[in-house]
Length: 434
Image 1 (cartoon, helix red, strand yellow):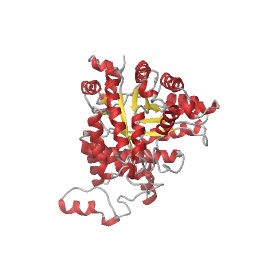
Image 2: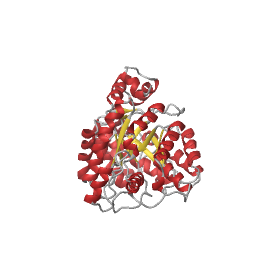
Image 3: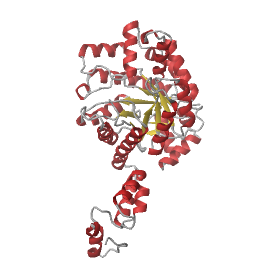
Image 4: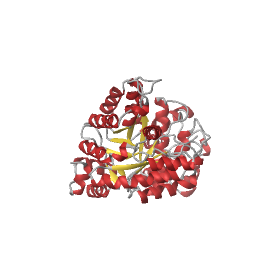
């Protein structure tokens, strides 16, 4: 049985117990959340070394890192380096978005090496294999798509992005309304091109029961992709985006009824003042399904710094109720990220997630900040480094900016505020800043 089927029968699985312990919750609380569909626990039965991590309502905000080969950089070893960087930086999941080299080998290597959940977009491989066979992308068959899905699920992928909501009606809405950037989602553009060329309905929508059957077989969580997510601020919250979201709401309900876990993906590029409304809309239209957002990126003019623009949007989205943040790296819009780009992207996204968790009422988040405040007051540098979200960088900067015997930092030195105020408030102060 799937985690959802077990939850519906009142059964608390081993994976539920482990995930609940990680959140500091009672296992029954987690089970009830999975039963309602407000929480998902992506754990493919064939991903043997996967650490159970839950996503959804009442839990800490999770962070995903995208990796994967391309035609220009097909080396699997580089992607495994990125996987290691993502895990060390604290990512809760990775997505293998490979489109170059040996895609099967890349996926299997990442799954075998990853202690956290792994996601993929099977449509990418179906598209690549069609081209390798001398066909056009639009000439791939429905069976080609479902063959790729089955292969990914069998290999142990914990969740898959499937662009089921890009229907003929949604595309007509897009054509009628128009956009500045049309479609920026790779999966969304592939699916749209296929539908228009073949003059058929989206097979992932039309044969949704076939998709559910495969997902249920391996207990794979469906991540319903936002194929019409906005690629610039001007296109945010338009009719095509919302129409697709309405379609996804109906598919969420059908997945749950079939015993398949499901979450929903969201934008994208979006102005600050639209983020909260978009999160609330997803929760209302999609029966409170966990919301997985890319960014959102809050300005279009900062290439090279989009890990920052997305962290700003991610903090607001998570505070508003989003459950899962997909990182954005400094290389976004510019090229394939390096391992260091991956690390920076994960850290930025984790900062956003933690900032939101503080105000979402995640108990351990507020306690973490309090412990840091106490360590700073006592000038306990060792503890400050240990508590840092990025202890590696914090330790490096501490050593670069201060001498070994420097009790205070070089910003204030003997004029340290902590030292001065402790003398007048009568608080014991240990150490010297002279």
